[in-house]
Length: 264
Image 1 (cartoon, rainbow, N blue to C red):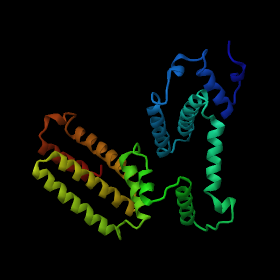
Image 2 (tube, one colour; image 1 turned 90 degrees about the vertical axis):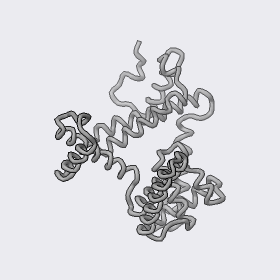
Image 3 (spheres, rainbow, N blue to C red; image 1 turned 135 degrees about the horizontal axis):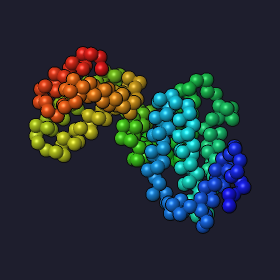
Image 4 (tube, one colour; image 1 turned 180 degrees about the vertical axis):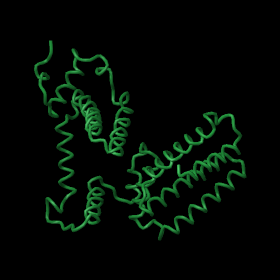
């Protein structure tokens, strides 16, 4: 028998919470009941990236759907904690609203903030106080290790810059990048794999720093570079009559340069 609560055309967040509770109940869905935070952890990550993909493609209909899928993950995790008696969705939204009010004193108090820089400065100061971060190192270690590496590196660099640990300009960062490339070359010559790995990491970190200084997002520029590689590879494959594996590296290089000259 269909639950009368779900026989309608429009639903709000409270309906979603009730539906998730039903799916997790004794008479609900076996799969939903079996899930844990750990078992659906990757789903949360995947749905986040699918939202980002919809945003990048400017697909409003897909964005609406993917935001719903992401919201489902939030409600799913919250329902597990509701069952454990720890918190419910109202606790989550209450804490969020309280945080937003506290971190916007220029709206809800008498603090002055005339531009975005001042707003962010207030946000960082209040965040540091509320999270009881006593040192700048505390703010660095608070950046989640589970973030994508480039994103985490950029966040750490930005927070270190607030303590004065930063380069003077983009040219200095570019010099550092060349220095790290040289050290990587030396490590490769040494034949020591651990040294190569360390220098590769330093090179990536420096490249991320340069992206930050030139007001580029590391994840985005790498994504665009990857997409460009795929387009050129496809053209190379076409030029090789769909048999690139039959050609030598030198022949493939020539086709690559041809694809590049065509503006691919």
